[in-house]
Structures are given as C-alpha cells and as structure tokens.
Amino acid sequence: MSSMELIKKLRDTTGSGMLDCKKALAENNDDIDAAIKWLREKGILKAQKKQNRETNEGVISLYNHGASFTNFTLCKIKCETDFVAKNEIFLSFANDLTKAIHDSENIKTSGSFEDISSIYVNGKELNSALTDLISKIGENIQIISYKKYHSQNSIFINYMHNKYNSSCSKIFSVIEVNTNDINKASEIADKLKVIAMQVSAMKPMGLNEESIDPRVLDDERDIILKQIENTPNDKKEQIVKGKINKFIKENTLMEQALITDPKNNVSNYVSELSKSNKLELNIISMDLYTI
Image (cartoon, rainbow, N blue to C red):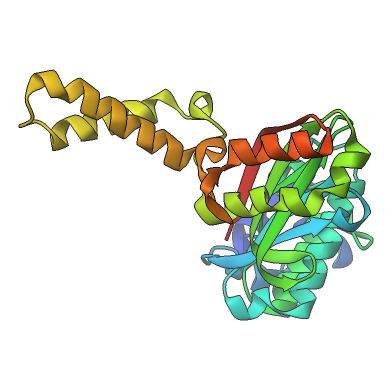
C-alpha cells in the first residue's frame, strides 16, 4: 500500500487523527498492527474514544486582564464533570491555551477550535496537547470558542462569577466602554464593573431596542395579543404598547433597573458617571459567556 492508503486504513481502524496515524506508522515502519499498539500505548486511542462523550462542565479562561483593560483574551473550554473543571492540571492547560491564543498573531480575532488548530501549547501542536490532556484527565475535553479583545478607543470591563481561580470561572461577562480618555476611564473601572455584573445577573438580550432581533419583538406581540384576545379592540393597541415597552426595559441593558440601585437604570448611571468624572462614556458592546 502507499503511505496515504496506510494512513487511511489506520484512521478507519482506530478513528485517530491523520497526524497521529502518520506519526504512528513512521515510528513503526508502516506496520499497521504495531502502529495500533503504539497509539494505544500513547493513550491516543483511549482519548479518541472519549471524544464523543458529552461535555456539560468547564471554564471560561481569561488571559492578560491584570496587565490591561484594552488587550486580553477569553477561551471557553468544556469537560464532563465539575470535578475535572476544578482540577489544577485542567486549569493550568486552560491558562496556557488562552495565553497561546493571545500571543498568536496569525489567527482570527474570534472563532472555534478549527481556527486555532495550528497553534502550539507548551511546545506541542494543539491537537497533541489536547490528546495528552484527555488521556491524563480521563474525560473528554472540548475547546468551544475564543475571542481576543483589543481596542485603542475603548476599555473592556469584565466580571467573573463562580470562580475556580483568579483567571477561570463558569460565568463571564464583558462590556466595552468607548471613551475619550482611556487612562481616566480605567481609574473608575470599579464603578463600571457594576454594569458587567448587571450583564451576568440579568442576562439582557441586547444593549437597547435596536439591538434586539425584530422577530423577538414580533413574537412577543403575538403572545400578548393571544393573552388579551377577549379585550375590546379599542384597548388592545394601548395594552400591547405598554407591555412591549416593559419587555424592552426588562431585556435591554441600558434600560434595565440597576442591580445596585433599582430606582435608577443603567443608562442614567452611565450618564452620571460621565458627568461626575468629566468623561465621555458609551457602552457599545457586551458579551456573556456561560458554562
């Protein structure tokens, strides 16, 4: 058989990746049986079998926040159990991976496992590093997504909830605050953090009415109309309008009641911070990550 035919046969037999099969054959003089044994010894087959198991736990990992409000990276990594999510080996891998993503210049700013398959973690190709981790941990590990945050005109404020350590948690929220003075805005990061906490606690659908999918509002109108179908027609429009306005206030970040001061809302809170600190502050994006 040709080299490619041998690799294909080994892949079909074991389910292992092409690079692993190629290496196994090279190490064993193209002997299929010896290559299968080699894969088993290296734990690759054992890891391969685990990669179809469900992953319902994991962490959101952060790198470089301590050094900057304008340049850091997040990565969502899942495992099977909370026990492994708390494991130091798993958490160390999460940190090393997120750092490797942060330091890699030739990848997209956000994406999934496929977009970072070419990077190296601690001197190993990502696929090999992940296989080693699965073999060592004994659970399926999946890299779900990542995002690199960088701006010259905004600061990013984040909030971690259900933390496993200083850089990994189960819930992670980020708000982007556009400003005319990054240094000055960074000085009031603690006050802005309330808004990031708001995103984690209240899970708004969007920043404002314009950022909500129109189909969501249409569905809400349909639901309201069904609920009031016995109401006189001349009153329906007013009721629908009132309920839609309430829905928007409850589900958009800028209109929500502030979690630390329910008599105020987020929009007014940002305006007050702007005036009192003589700063331009505008929330222009938000992200919420959960496990």
